[in-house]
Length: 198
Image (cartoon, rainbow, N blue to C red; front, side, top):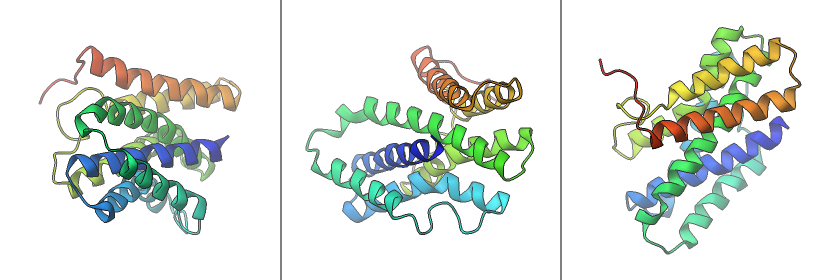
C-alpha cells in the first residue's frame, strides 16, 4: 500500500512540476528538472532530516521512469496551458495528500515521535513544490497568503497519528487522511479560506 502511494505521488507531483515548467515556457530539460525536484524534493529533505541513507529515490528506477513518463505526457499535450490550471491544482492537491501520509508513516517507522512525524509529513508534501517554485522564479505557495496548503498537510498528519493510536486499520487510516488533506485543500480554494495575515 505504501509503495503504491509513493509511486502514485511521485507521478502526480512530477506531472505538476512538468506542467509548471510548461507554464513558464521551459524546454524539455527544464521540465525534467522541475518534475524531478517536485517529485523528490520533499522526500529528500525528510530523509536527510530523519537520517535515512540512501535517500528514498536512490537506486529506484521505477520512480525515475515515472518522472520521465510524466514529462513525456506533458510534452505530448498540445493544448493551451491555461486549460491545465485546474489540472495542476488538483494533481498538486492529490500529491499533497499522498505525500503527507507517506511522510508521516516513514517517519514513524524510523522512530520519530508523533508530533515531529506530522511535521515531516508536511515537509514531504510541500518542499518539492517549494523548491520547484524557487527554480521557476515564483513566490512559493508555501509562503504566500493563499488557500490552506501546508495547514491541510498538518491537519491530515495529525488525523493519521490519532487514528493510528485509536487502532484504526492502516489501509483505512491512510485513505481517510489522503481524502482529508485533498478535501481541505480543495474546499479552502473553493471557499477562499486563508490563514490570518501577519
